[in-house]
Image (cartoon, rainbow, N blue to C red; front, side, top):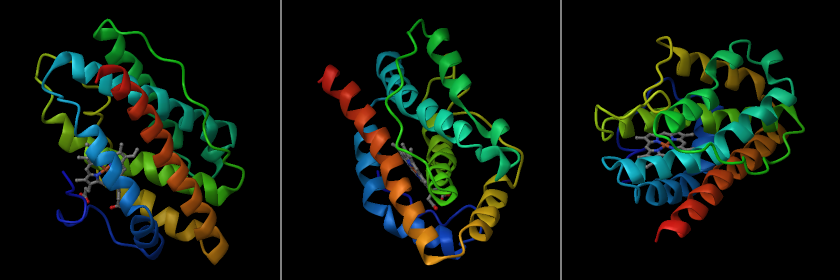
Amino acid sequence: MSTRFSTGCSGAITDVRASLRQATATDHERLDALFGRFRLSEAADYRAFLTAHAMALPAIEAALDAAGFADALDDWPARKRGAAIAADLSALGAPVPAPLAAPALVSRAAQWGAAYVVEGSRLGGALLARSVPADLPKSYLGSVQPPGNWRKFLEKLDKALSLPQDITHATESARATFGLFEQAGLRVRGAMD
Ligand code: HEM
């Protein structure tokens, strides 16, 4: 289901966002196809989907924490969803997997690129949450943010990355972040198929 470019968009199309979106379009398409294979209406597949995300998202969040990303984005701590995935897994009686090794986020621009991917993933998450039956826990996919938070994020992203090399670093790191989710999805899916 490749719906990202056909649904219009939430939030303004800023220059930096347009650039990251364009540069990661094929990465997103691959992930969309990979995670689209998990039938979220079935508990076992949903658990596997959350397990894969729990291998990637907390790793990126911890790397952003360690890099001091809250200095760049003040509400970063409130945006994190690692605890929400762990809560869902535990409610489903599933263990929380060990995180994969996150890409190095040495520059501020690289940190923004990774944050773009994890914040952007909420947009698809909201759509996916609709497939999860009402009796299953969905703190992660259903996690709600104050209105306008994505727009606020994009405005800050746009201001933070003003140089061409910033965009280059952010793009590399955004692609590596997509790559981490892909690695996690392939591992979990490989163990199921
Ligand atoms: C089956 C899985 C997925 C589906 C169906 C999906 C779907 C979508 C949709 C519909 C949007 C656009 C929403 C809008 O513009 O209003 C979107 C945006 C986005 N998604 Fe996904 N997504 C999936 C998985 C992921 C994953 C795993 C990640 C990253 C870890 C991700 C990262 C992003 C990003 C960064 C954007 C924002 C792009 C922009 O700047 O507009 N998505 N996704």
